[in-house]
Image (cartoon, rainbow, N blue to C red; front, top):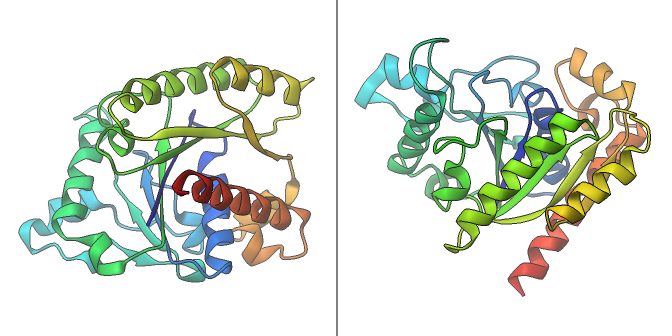
Length: 254
């Protein structure tokens, strides 16, 4: 089972990238599970026809010990299994703690043993790398980490913080940083800026994702480019990203 975490600053296009990547994997014949680890709980909506699914925390609160896997795991586009950890009511409680509770419940209900996915992707907010948001790498859930960034200063700052957290946990044999996915914002010299930042944090840019209106066209219909704009050049971009991620994983396993 490939265990991948995708981190990035809020609003950077992380969930869009993750959903399109999950769709690309699914269309290659892989069984994929995508776990949204952001209190906004909108990671999987583009795999679920634009609809928001009930979160683990919501269902836990409503059903308690009677909670079953089918209450929190939903099948989306291409058979991708969708899960949203959820978060507390704004201003009450800790979002990081919510992620920990959701992960504990998935483990207790043996989600991975039951569904046996080939690839699990955790979509994680990267503005705050506290204990809860670091859970995918700290708890051994993910082995590989990719960071979505643009050339914007705050996005690169977040990428540096995430890389530092991975380095700290990496010493204990947890996840490894595999690279940066550049989600372009059309900033001047953006590719050079991000390549330089990647080198500084000891990694590389694995894929350049150009800015494209096709993404919005697909999202307005509640989905990914693979589902709604099949002739878009973006489909090939996400296919290349999927192939690179798979190749890098295989290299590591050899």
